[in-house]
Amino acid sequence: MPDHELSIYEYIAGAVVEGALPDDFNLDEFEQERGQIRMADGAWDGIAIYHMASPDLPGDIDERIGNVVDLASAGAYERADEACSSLVDEFRAIAIIDQVEGYVHAHAREIDAEALFHYAMRTLLLSRDVELLKIGFELLEVFGEPDDEVKDVARLLGLSDEFAIFAVFNMMDWHDGNQEVFELAKKVRGWGRIHAIAKLEPETAEIRDWLFFEGVDNEVVPAYSALECYEKSGFASRMKQPLNAREFTAAGTIVDTLLDEGPVPGISALDDSQGALQAYIGHAAQHDLDLDDLYTVFHIRAYADHEGFGKTA
Image 1: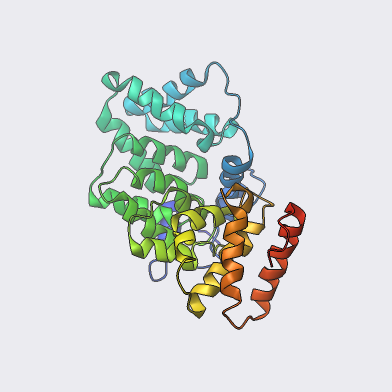
Image 2: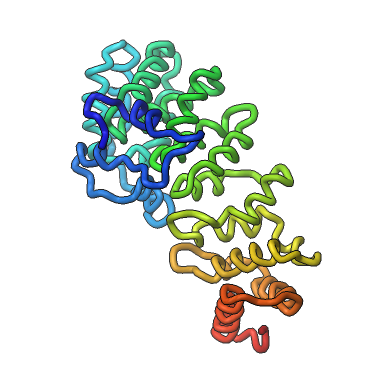
């Protein structure tokens, strides 16, 4: 249970073990302080991104964001916290990220950049309010490439599935940002991994291999990353070559998650879904199948029958 004197940053820092957070880590206590119905870390934002339309924002949203920014720019940090808390009580930070960053860019000449940067860092390091901390991330992003000390703050907070997407947004602006996103993706296992994979570019063989072998392995629903991993791992090209046992198992995992279209489009989003399934079946004929492999073949047949592919398996 968190010590009530600890900030979120301090709580996360104290929980890190060998560069990552334990599987049972969560921010329950901090969410409960906001009166939030509890879900897994990152779930509210994940659901908003994947399943909800952008909310209708009121006409005075820019004025309210401007009030927060202007107070922070003036060094009135506690008053800025109060105004910001009122704002995020109505709108989650993810819903107003464009408006926050847009306001700062539009009023850059009127803002004390040093004071605003200090407020962003103060929020990241000292806040006990989950949504307020995310606003700190959004403000930090407008400053571009930070120094290593600031990067370390973003890296550490990003280890939490609740903040990973905001860390990723910042990392994408760093000179080696894609590698930073990759390193984070390997350390998070929930919504953070899903978000990181969605932004990750398959620039290297190492990244493509990791996406192929491990990308769909998350603690939420693997299907969220199935299409990303299929496309970014070069799955179709891999199917044109012989597969060893490990590669065949990984291919089957991706195929099976593509077939699970409960949360998001998967197999139906492929240009040639029939060809992809036939390629996998061709490899299956060359391997000794275990129970998981047989389930995948069964799911392919069921999908093929439903789509009228004819004799696919």
